[in-house]
Length: 304
Ligand code: FDA
Image 1 (tube, rainbow, N blue to C red):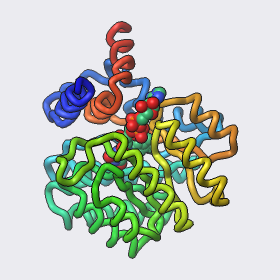
Image 2: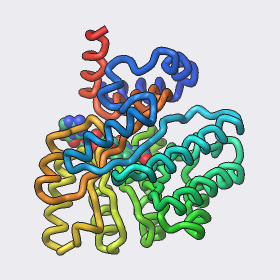
Image 3: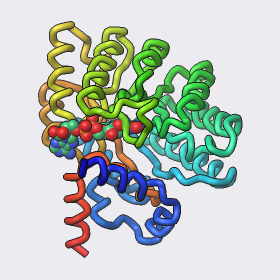
Image 4: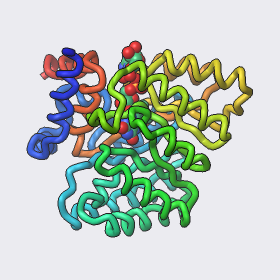
């Protein structure tokens, strides 16, 4: 009950445009630097180098969600293309994640598709894999429509499916040939579309992972939940699933010991590295997921 209330509170804060605008002026505060790589791409590259030296690969996410004009969306598109070009000059293995609302999805779907088409063309040229993050349910159908069109140009594009959605398994089967990141889901969704009970979501998540793994298509298992990770490891061992058809993914700053254990066991582990000025919404969603994450914020406050 208390967890539900804190979750709703932080998810509410995460969607406040005004707070995000203030946060841009403050710079990384309240301990956000524990989980956000910094404000610039150079900061992200420094983090990527350090992770690489520990046997980890990366996904870059240039943070930004509150985009209300075509100019802002075009700026974000250019920033994504610049990120791809920069990744291409680095010897490190780095993917790119994007959010469609940052690229104008709430303004006009065709305009967003055009922006994504430009990003995907740059990604194809430089052979950088692009993953479209999944946002709240309002944008779900549009995201899948855009993905389908983009995959006709470049197969190195995938997306995320959220196990809390009741119809996620049906969509997973339709996307059986698409490289997918599977997650539990980070937004507040209605009971009509999303399971609310943790045990049901966990069970659905595990079934989705094993279903996609059996297809032999690339599967990113994005979770900090050691119980799910242990079950997946048992499953892949028992079913001889080749280790180059999946990877575990973690958010930057979360469970570094577990990341290292997996690397030592020979599993591929990729870290999602967010950077940029728009850190506030991302930081609030992480606080919503797990009340214990508030310790980041408390430590951050005490350091000030
Ligand atoms: P969950 O938070 O359910 O925790 C389960 C258990 O694991 C806990 O009870 C605890 O025992 C243990 N645990 C978890 N975190 C721990 C910690 N830090 N320390 C110690 N123990 C811990 N969501 C979305 O909607 N769209 C997206 O595109 C993405 N993208 C994405 C990428 C990546 C790389 C990750 C890791 C996650 C996402 N997510 C996401 C977020 C995802 O949907 C989900 O909200 C969070 O990962 C939290 O759920 P978990 O599966 O990690 O475990």
